[in-house]
Length: 150
Image 1 (cartoon, rainbow, N blue to C red):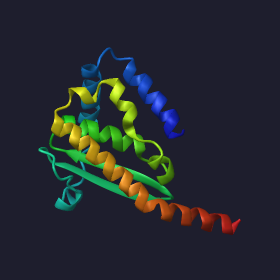
Image 2 (spheres, helix red, strand yellow):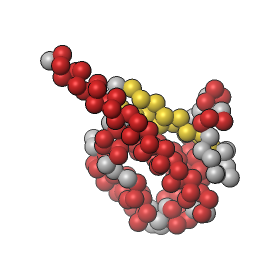
Image 3 (cartoon, rainbow, N blue to C red):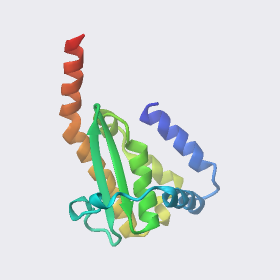
């Protein structure tokens, strides 16, 4: 499934709820079920700076795709960051870079966030985008190597 298809699926799921507060409540409920990051990853270098809550963000790159994990000591922050991490995990860098999370704004989720939490959301997106950019050459090199074997 492409990110565009995933966006339609997520938008339909969230739009089925009557308002932004209900959508945020669903995301918070999902965050409660999200396993915490292992202690080894809850270190200073994985913290997103500028957030009142502690927000850890851990990117991984394997098999030409980006994967993202996060955790926070705030359920709301964990919910929003988790939404982005889940949405973008498992996709190649080029597809991630071509698909920003602006589609979330009309769903009313961000309007119920404090300015600091909206800032955390934008910082997580920035980290995801930067990681995808950094790994674009690795993904291209892997594809080139695979094609040369054929």
